[in-house]
Length: 287
Image (tube, rainbow, N blue to C red; front, side, top):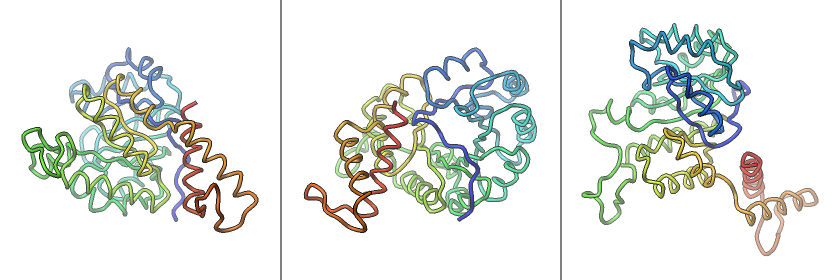
């Protein structure tokens, strides 16, 4: 397995912040576990030079900051990397990642760990290759750019389409496939994975359901586009008291038992042990 640069989100709620709005940097950092300073979609092309200047002048905690740069092959990409290299930030989100070589080149140019954002058809079908890149520390996926690149119109079922197995607001099959593909690729190569944004800010129930599902699938966090989503995500990722108590009991019992053993009428083996470890990591991030 290829070693990855050492950077991991300290908590589950990652909040996007336009890089051309430096007056919002501190507020975003106060509200979320991680701030994603966005030089790409959140900034108009004409405003990107000023956004890079604001990035250079900023002084957020590098342990809690990611910088999203424009895709390889765009006019802004090289300038974005130069700006990040002049800061202390150590994790770069590469928009529209499509190959291991792209990820490795960004890591080599800046020394930063790379969060590969997979959001194009080519990126999805190359998810395993991207996850294997030496510079890759984690992966994220995006639905809307993916559907746009496919010539589609919407990533989710509408209320009019709901009925039978279809639920309004849930992802269509292709985005669900992309989500699973990225999560599996990340896990296969020892990378962490971040779940995509929930665009309907008012849909708190939908946001919570997706975050709970992300926890169940092993995602370490969920990206947010509005501060109001942070609390919902944090609550979903935080294990309850019963989960924590069980995890502690499993880990304590494992110290005195080899292989498979029985605990409170339940079988405990390697997978259960690893699930207990994951629960304790989430509990630690929630404190």
